[in-house]
Length: 169
Image 1 (cartoon, rainbow, N blue to C red):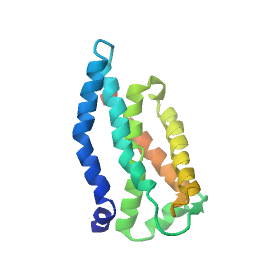
Image 2: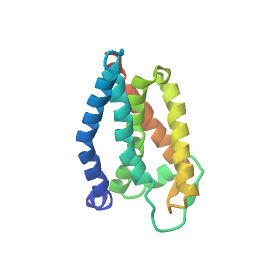
Image 3: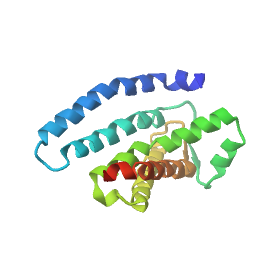
């Protein structure tokens, strides 16, 4: 876990420092929309989706030394990770599940059309695929993997399901 902090501590600190301005943005947006139905809810959804997703995008779009790679065989990378070091596998898998978690949790609050899990899955898969293609096209020295798309999508759907009851209230 020390290597996670060494690699990404600056991103985590930036995300923590972004929370007060994010709360302020919610308040300002909600006041600006005062009188419209669901003003606070829409403001929380928009700011939460952006603020919850940007740090992960910063991480996955940060260049690494080396040549970009493509991993197009589903579940191969995942199995390789599971046979590797447990801490590295946990960080990699949990990180990929979290990349689009805020997307899945908050966007259904903003867009009713995304309130069903299969619709979140399609939207998250499209966004995740775009991220992986961007990683490869920008030659960031990262592995663009089908498994990352699957895990990012699963994270969005799981977070959507976990927040479903909260969104209804």
